[in-house]
Image 1 (cartoon, rainbow, N blue to C red):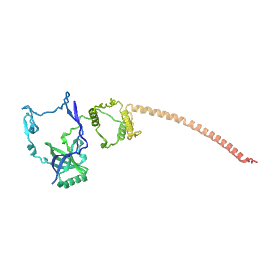
Image 2: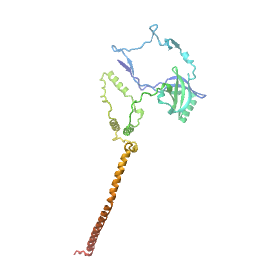
Image 3: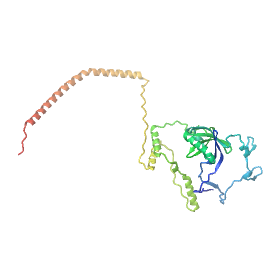
Image 4: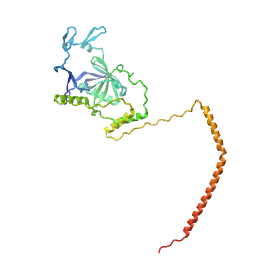
Length: 360
């Protein structure tokens, strides 16, 4: 069984430096203090004895004397390949032949997009070490702002030399620890090893889903897991019933990707109070040109040519008869039209000649 201790809220945060040194900027030296830029809000657990609830603690025991030793009696040692332990003292570490032992040495300035996010490690703030450091600190900060670049530096911390990136955050200089390039693994064997084709409609729906979800203010995100744990602890401390977990969503294999995408777009729209999702279509692809058949092409072409020639001859023989029939039909139609026009004209003339009767 495990219990945990909640961290108190609403208290003033006391910022303590974890490293004192200087930034080496060419011939300029800037005294600084290294301060943690992040903090963990995760809930810490304690191990207890299930039978009586007592705390379980670890004791540090010397394996040669088989007795417990205190922190003052504990030092560092390097284990050699043959198992031999070589003692390393704090004085040995303090006299390492490194220029970065107490200095953050800037070695280059590069565009920020040159840094692979996979290299990003812990983040720190660099605080000016007193009033004399204010001027050179501000100079470096403003130079970084105007150049739109970040500084690459080397420094030593916790027994090893590290790589860092300096950038401006509001009015302060922040430093991100960077992994060495050879510490980042290549993504070999991670991507699917099967050939998959994604069609345009699926991409359209994926684009629509991305547009529907849109952007979000990261400040609005919070740790729901921690909040649920706090509710459980509060309920148990008050002797109340522990809140029940909601029914888990029924999972399963996605058999129809298109249906899943369309449903996701609809649900995202509904959650935002919108009626329908606008799906952007990609430009249509150009149709492929038809290629003539190779096998049997000559025979088919010859047959088609012969058939066409025969049809042309038959059409030529009947052309004269068609012309005569058409001429006769035109003459008959002209006579009929003329007679109708004459009769109509006579009726119109008769109507105009007949006087209207005036009413009394």
